[in-house]
Image (cartoon, rainbow, N blue to C red; front, side):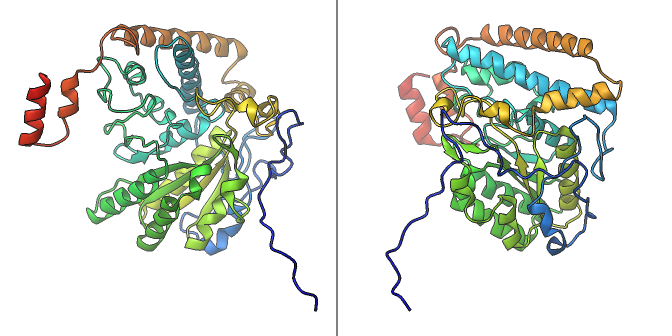
Length: 410
């Protein structure tokens, strides 16, 4: 037997770099309707295959097919499409505002709108999301005020969070939207803990944890799965796989599991992959997982296969690490366009109605923006009071903070 050679380290490489031809040959896409829909109480061991496939409802012709189809009416789908269109228009206006210096920072949802908008529709009042900075659709789809969202982005005098958070890091307890943390993986542990507390209280509310593909490499992600599986917490564990973690491609964080969903299998958690650009599929899978949690059947892990079309943030230049035409080559298409085509095929929508809806939504977003800017922007108008930093921290303000506030003269 020959002596072994020197050790070598394997470093995953992206399939293509800037200037190359986009390549998504590694994304294996089954036919729409081909993946079975298991019973709610299915044994995780019996549905292992769902962690390696992709659940799809809309086919290339725009038809809804298969066992996951048929859960939403045309009216509900039109409402869902308007939510996605509103989020996309909101993003476009806030991106322009950042370029104009009205806010310091912004993060788009371009290409990922179906995930948060459809998931919100599957939840019940009182359920709590622990989101990342790319799930503002949870608020839009729940009717949260766009003016309040914009005031938070501008950090102006009417900012609901009083300047205590970065732009886009919203928070709203009445809308089931836990305060966003820039350190994304912390949300996973908190979501599981919240769900466990809900179960301890014999409540009926469930939690939803959100994380990006890159942050699954953090230890908090794995700790959350341990607790969720051990105590059968009523929580849905969402992974948004948009192919990129800032400038690092998903292959670095994915490890050797093959898919992000497969990570859940080692913890005995039922794990599914779904087409994140298919509104109908996202809703159906979310509804399945939420019902499972509410029936005391424990957690479910869902990987949404999607693509981040825009930059990671306004501080990012994606042309430095991926081909400029890569988003055009993404094989799962655009979520709004796909739902529009489906509704047109059903006779419930038309190109004319779509253009009219775009104009109406743009008018409503611009009106909200004008109102928000009347309260101030980053460099003009009203700002949160310095007094606010002392308020809302303790139920009763301790003496040392009272003294500091008096010294500050606020």
